[in-house]
Image (cartoon, rainbow, N blue to C red):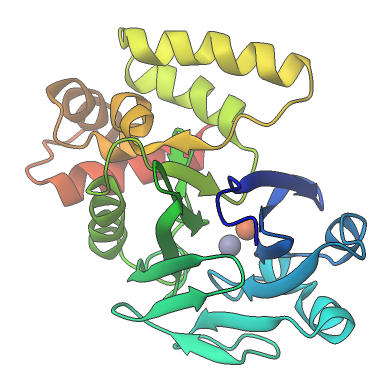
Length: 264
Ligand code: ZN
Ligand code: FE
């Protein structure tokens, strides 16, 4: 077998602004969060076997394609143990691993509640020198998911867990929200040089209709306000927005999340 081939990592545009992540290796493939089947089916062919469908959380724009793809390909469906996922074969929680021998890949599971109560992430190497995290709607490029089923403290813990991954870990999130996230983040940190540089990069990519992801943990640590609640600049801006002194990272996070919700 071609076990020395490198994995091919592809964000497949779906629905209005979702990405379905595909990893191909050795003639086998996995997809993450197929919100609809069509864009994945268009890439399947006789030489490519879909082994696995990995689900991060139960929202329709992440699971809408599961049944059709599972029926067509027989792929195994992996998903969060504590959520109701269509056709789920393998329920997962933190501490579990996903073994995909056809692709020579293994992922570990992280519990990252906040956007939904049972949201999980999958992380592990794609190649010996390249790791990724599939984090659904928890961490976005320069943003984070809304708190539909969790508290600010839970979400901050989840983001801290992701922030603790090695800085070169590729952040494979599920939506193209980067440009509008950056417009907001520049209000929070108008003097952040790394954020301005990223704004230029993202403007160029979107002008060519190209994805702005994957990001990396290191880039998020430099530019994502939600990973920067312990920075004096972010604390001061959040306190001014909330019109109150914010004494803890949780309070800073809650104010940032409200600010982002209000931002147009
Ligand atoms: Zn969601
Ligand atoms: Fe979503």
